[in-house]
Image 1 (cartoon, helix red, strand yellow):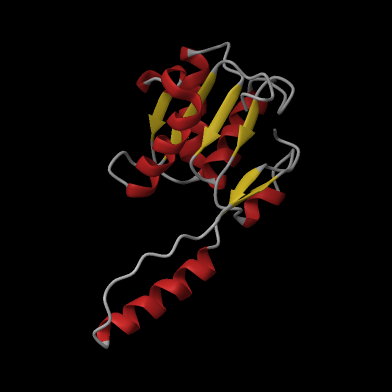
Image 2 (cartoon, rainbow, N blue to C red):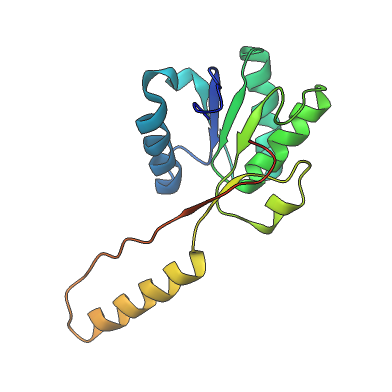
Length: 154
């Protein structure tokens, strides 16, 4: 988003105690640093209705926001709906990126740019590691790569 000239970015992620939400905020902060301050982050649920409500709140607080980092594609879909309700254009007025590459990412208008997370492969790998551990093997760590899926929202 910084490369796209976005200067006033906010984040909407899942519950504050959720490890996935915390990991995503950690990653966002590595890129955006202090410009993504605590008051620019809303912790909420993972669904579209949560994204809608959080986006409406953030628009009241930061009417000049021009970028949204959504912790899930469902959150992003609700945020897009909120932006449209305020007659804001995505991505012209506000760019938005989701996370998960959930099927909803292709049904939003515009289609959602997202981070593809290989959930099926992650589950298979975790099961394999767990089965090996049951046979006495030590725990291992496997790093799985995620991909940016560029669509029209960014």
